[in-house]
Image 1 (cartoon, rainbow, N blue to C red):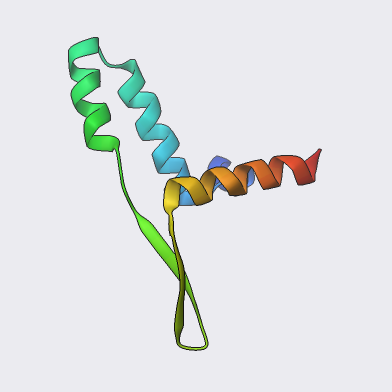
Image 2: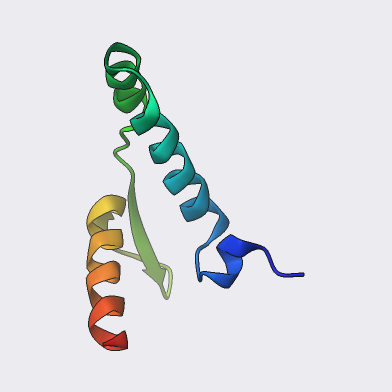
Length: 75
């Protein structure tokens, strides 16, 4: 049996992020604002090739670019 998130083409981490966002949005205003601040992230990564570190990119920017790229490729 395949999990629904896997069948939808999501990674487990992405599935958790979507679920957490849905829960945060369902909260009342005061609790929602506190939870949304906790959910913000500033993660950077870089690709290493031949022992050299590549350009550092923000994870959110890279995810947005990948989403646009995959949406354009499937249409």
